Length: 337
Image (cartoon, rainbow, N blue to C red; front, top):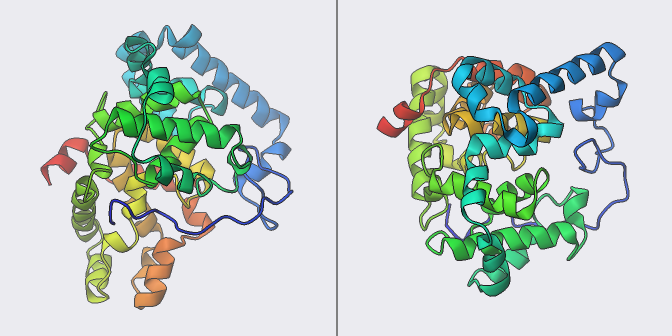
């Protein structure tokens, strides 16, 4: 993908006045996705969720005060609970704790405000152009020049000034938008900094630099992993001249925050922030494995369509993530490929 090429170039239609799901997205007429079903949860399930939230509150402490101590004492418990999914009411705080962004925020008082108010960016017009294309079906971002769009603009503009080598690429909007649904502008900004500059894991800025060098590297590595783990499918891709750049670029650029069901995106992000980029490879492999028997029999056009439009059952996080974790991919292995 070209650095200036967006993830999507379509303009959103008028904002429909329809009910929204529990995440704030406009419901489709035939939606029967898990996030739309939760209102009918039984009392037993509700009580179980409350117990789970209490466990998490005890684990992180007031404002995250116990988090680092708990991680040092019980890292395997933390990993297991994160893979099961962070309670939605605690997600914003936990994401900041596991990404290292909370520490960056505390070490840089006033920096974000300066970037937003006193600096100018050469990307401002591009950002303004793309704002309405970021999560256009979410009520927070639908109002033109509304609070959601203003916050999204501020975060993206601030980062484009903070790191002028990266500047702005449209795919960054989906990451910023996702974060803004769970935290303040300033918190979202420092989490993006933590990711791109490598506060905890390998720096991700190469996903957005000119030529998208890290995207190219990851796609090449992903192709090798497909061939290794699913040789029949890898050969079929080769025969049909399908390569990962045709379907998987946005998986890495937006970490599954574009075009995938939001409940899956959140679960992927829980693990991604704690374990690193390997989960993007694992989830990608799991999607292909889940649909393997259908994909190996499809000709080029149908194959490409299927790789861009996975069936609903393939994107159920409770099914897909355990399958993803069965692929033994490590961050060190990714670097060495």
